[in-house]
Image 1 (cartoon, rainbow, N blue to C red):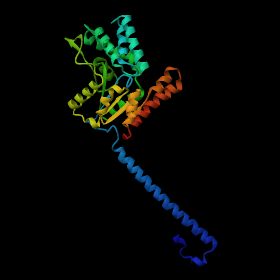
Image 2 (cartoon, one colour; image 1 turned 120 degrees about the vertical axis):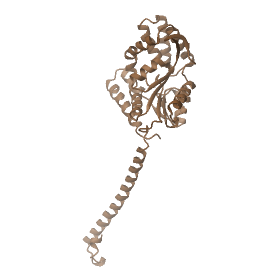
Image 3 (cartoon, one colour; image 1 turned 60 degrees about the vertical axis):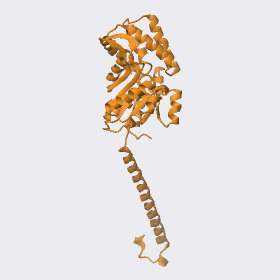
Image 4 (cartoon, rainbow, N blue to C red; image 1 turned 180 degrees about the horizontal axis):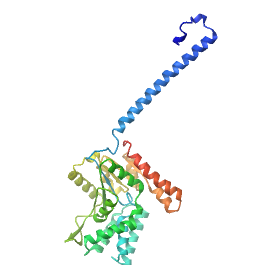
Length: 315
């Protein structure tokens, strides 16, 4: 508008006034644009500040992640898959295999960890391994993982665990499954280690008894607390992941609880407490019923979404 200052208002032609109007409109638009740009700059600054507090925090050695195993990291129950492999190696009879099969069917249909069925599975497993060498089961466990477990890992949950590893954090499995089986799975996934149910052994031979009780429910929370103390971890900076309401005690003691493929009770609890939810079951079901596009795209999307989710700050 300053360019038209030489023209007295009373002598301006219609054309000049039109130019003036145009310049005024342009100036107003420019000021509005600057306001928008300032707002955008502020938003970008806020995002940058948020990025500095990404989760998981890179290099935070006092943070770690704890993952339940059954139906969280892997589809189905690790104990059942382990039992199938042992049966193939003639560790037990068809009748005992049928018992394992029933336990797995219940587990998948009910979608929950029923304490009575878990106790039954525990007793079955202990009676089977009694008298066997720990090293013998560990060696077979490596083969069993390749045969029955490797293809059942949820890509989305695996990506979540990898995000923690990439941030320089330790990642632990926490499961009621035997610690030997859990350790093999953790090692094969490149995780730090595993907390699992410990079966008593004397001179490397299983006695058929447990040390304490199965690592289930509140026992998992106690195991995580004990490990956090030993590792000098700050639980408020740690994350935990599970599909089951039985693991609410473990999820409740960390700063970043996640419900993964949650059962009904856990989903309700997570929503009430504003916990994050992830469900990777849809893509897996699509793959099982023979939908190639859904299977391929769904699995990749699940993994990518999980990785991206952990590179944004927790709400």
